[in-house]
Image 1 (tube, rainbow, N blue to C red):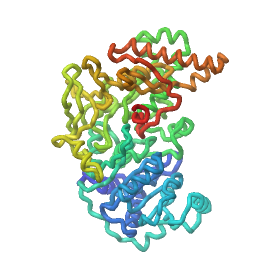
Image 2: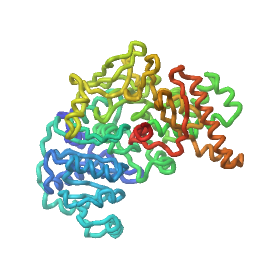
Image 3: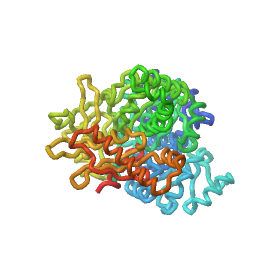
Image 4: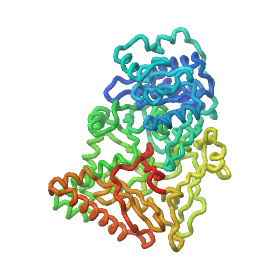
Length: 563
């Protein structure tokens, strides 16, 4: 196979189409795949169209839409033109999307019909061109959401298809792109509430994907089912660029990944690799696996004995693998911490999981491993070409801030030199995460630096560690621990679906339900306090009736709930 001559997205595409021209590249789970040759043809004519519309090197192009083969075509067309892709999470609030389009100074926008209302109020004349990603047609400045839907349904010729315009612009030469050129600006939606435009070069993205192939084997026989948003760098780098680099096939869902959508897709695609966040596997464990084990008295009694527990978990693991299609060789987990009881189950079940650690600012992965080399509670070792060091380590725990450097580190925050300067120290990126490295080089994440508070005698109290203990309760779905007037408190979101069934069976009144919930919350508080140090005990718990609002990687937006 021809080597990758340059670390650019353009070089990735050229090599892949040379090596795997007739292999399936991108497809819907229930659709006909585009081959690598067809994929490149689509990218080429879309790239030529952009250049004809006056989109030049360094111009920013917004991409707003659900995962689809056309999303991948758009991203590759923009970046191989030499322009800069600005992927925007469609779940962002309309005002935030408007801010990103203005702040990044986007010259063109690609948007799917499903989310067109989010830019409908903008003056579309401010952009050189607005393209409907569903069928690559040009949207007029006066088009409304209702009219767009009608035109699509009718297959109207009023929507000019880009393909029919390509003949007159054929022959435009592709740009020669340097690997240090800006490829993408990814706006984060962090737990602090301050959106930042992370500038990632071609070298950042491709280096990270290449380094990942040194720890995880991906071949042209692999099939990935994409369930995370492509606008997030985790999915874009490891779920799009990496598999296309290695000749693998990526499949997309036409609807959000609910159980009813996922089950037939898993059976049809039989994926070998899935990228996920912890919440997906944690929900599956809490809602299906744990209740199944608990409902039989005999199993529940003997489950406390390690030999029996491992045998039961191994049997459950086989069933879980069959749910995922039966061909899974790697279930990648990233974006947030995995609950320890869920990881223990996965290990004993023989489920092929691996936990990784990364940031938007690092083009995704910093540390990781494959399914054979996982270590309990660790995110693996630094990927090749990336250095990690622990700064200002605590003498008692060994934990300190994680600093990283390597070719995957961002160029900075777009139009924000002050925050860029704050993010680096002597060439090292400050992650804001606390961690430690063991004698074998495995990294262990201890939480966010800002989520550590100092106890009455100078002890470090890790709020996320307490949350993981709260979440072990079978009536708790998620929690948030915070400091409240010098003491610790927890907001707790209960498993109301489970509780509603219980309350209905017992025919409880509203007053009785309220009393029962208060008893449950107090029980959780006592259970937690029995398992933590005296300085980490909870003084009170608060019922969080609505699910916590979260970031795209399912981290709770703490600033919304803590003063």
